[in-house]
Length: 347
Ligand SMILES: NC(=O)c1ccc[n+]([C@@H]2O[C@H](COP(=O)([O-])OP(=O)(O)OC[C@H]3O[C@@H](n4cnc5c(N)ncnc54)[C@H](OP(=O)(O)O)[C@@H]3O)[C@@H](O)[C@H]2O)c1
Image 1: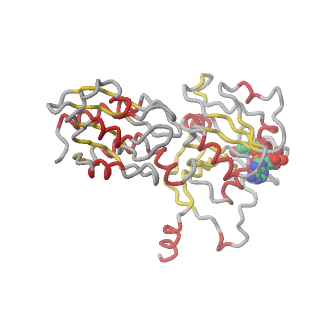
Image 2: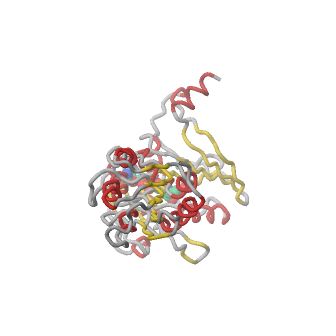
Image 3: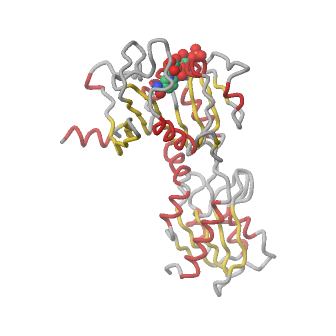
């Protein structure tokens, strides 16, 4: 049976409740329990890994028997596995819920299947209600499930002749204030910002996301990769969040660790060696190349070895947007997927 107006309103409310939860290892999920007459009996949301899931949180606000015959409206399909908490599908069955309305299917290999379990127990199921809104809310989390790691954006600023720094290593600033403000806004959308030790030692970056002199509310975790140490007086040590230092060069291990810390979006800000390593490893999902109308010449190229030795191996990109930022240009691009590559080959 299609969702009623009361159920759709409850889903909109459940999405608002979900937003109260933190971004992290688990998705943001909200739940509303409706009486058979369509009145709100209880509300709940997920407060992060290890705490009750949204529907269990909502049920916990009711006395035993109060949910009998009720409808549970949840932004994500109730889970079907025992992790740090028990399966939500079972909790709903045991509470006597008669109908479950949810927005998105659970993509998890182990946690999915809750709707089927509920159906087998005789619970009426309606999925896909306000699915687009729910998908928008947890799109970054869904991307982590799809990739098995956080989404990675690799960003650099280059002169029009492809250099990331002048011959002496100075690179502040290649681009103008509009481009730099754009970088800061994008930093604030990320959960972690990553640089190599080369950049840390050359530029002493603060790795904060700033709006002029003020800090944005959201600050990415600063991450430094490389064997060399972080000086005691490095600006990054004054970042509002403690800096993470990964001495190893293993980028897969780095991303797995960040995923386990709840990082969904990673912003790699160089320098050329680290950016090239991400691209060579096929770990760049989005490329942001800021192009400034300036010539630097010299040896300090924006990218170094990305594993391309002949033109047939070129890493082709698809550009979504060319943005004009004051005197500079920004290409927002992604490396072609295998399907896109074969389509381009055929055309
Ligand atoms: N234009 C721009 O957008 C931009 C951005 C940033 C920096 N820069 C400029 O770039 C220059 C610094 O360049 P850089 O290439 O030395 O900086 P980098 O890429 O930040 O650092 C390179 C170092 O990171 C470590 N590292 C960590 N993971 C690695 C991996 N998977 N593969 C290889 N090395 C890894 C290595 O140091 P260990 O020996 O410590 O392990 C390596 O020497 C400076 O002049 C800076 O101003 C420009």
